[in-house]
Image 1 (spheres, one colour):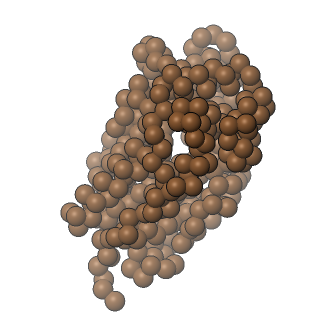
Image 2 (cartoon, rainbow, N blue to C red; image 1 turned 90 degrees about the vertical axis):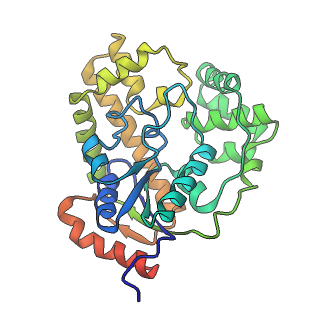
Length: 318
């Protein structure tokens, strides 16, 4: 067996929010001469480094980072855009003889990379705004019922509270004249010359819940409120993805004087825990992990985790 990892094997480190996957990716990249490629749909925006928990300058200085903070808040990122950008970064890294390490927790992004995705036409901003306005006016149950008439397959698999995905499905069906489920049935194949091997960090729910609260309180203490204030000063369309990032609506309500800071923190933590719960469900049922670690990553655990990862990369099994 060769002692040098095959550079065509792409390592994917995934997990729910606050599982320590970014820290693990940096440590693995240091040892394997790797490049960390972002797979988080909010960390692609440059406006909210703190609130989206993007790697800080110290970590970015340790190993190369790609697709972090590359979009302006006024932009509307998409899974098709991200997949194309990620594949380009993977090719650039492997052509340079470096290990490509994709790191993130956005299920749609990961599925698009590993399984492929249909090339859905861009939806006009006006249609996306109309979807957000209708959801706000109608409420989740009525909006989902309306979507059911347009796209019953997608409507049946989404809950009334899943505002972002419901609005996306409505906008696609309305803007393209074809249901999202039909577009998704046309998924493209992943690149044949790339092998993906996956590591899933999956800490127990209580550990994850505690980590979410500690992390959000640290964000508030280190500048998240200033970030949101600066974002609001830009007067961006409230339907843009960056305006819906976890914590933005709650801190906005605090800055507007509608709730206290304690309430903003409490409701943000609750929303983030709910998001982590949805991530856990997705990873449990829809993510094929080659190696699963049932713990939150910490530096003290690295010596136990890394041999499994190295073996995974070298032998394609764990």
